[in-house]
Image (cartoon, rainbow, N blue to C red; front, side, top):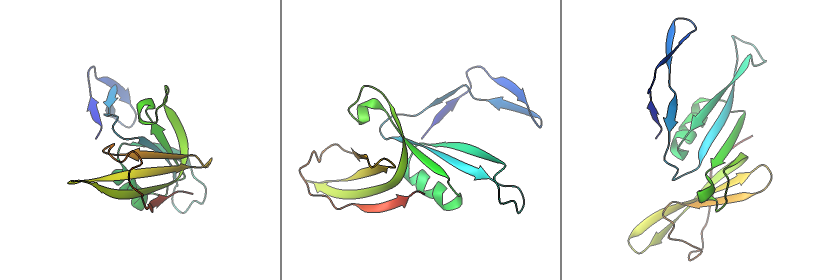
Length: 143
């Protein structure tokens, strides 16, 4: 879940008064997602603009994908989640998941396949560490 704060409110004028947020925070336990969605005017076949949506949860991304025609989706991975020094922004091809049981604890591993063929796996609990043979099922596919 994103936390938004209005430390100092700034006003913008566009069809009235809008208060803009100057800080958005998300704990980095999972990768984030950016979706580009084309916007169309009545019966137009060409997009008039593209909106960008920042989504912080896989379930929210799945719900968003049901109700929007997503053109491109990117995974944003904080460095510590991918064992690298820097953050990564990569276009997604698909997301798959697998579950496993470690004693009394059931957990999920997500697999992010990028458009370059790179595979990024994220174990929610961190307990697997290659101990279990996993069978992944595709939960989201992107164009």
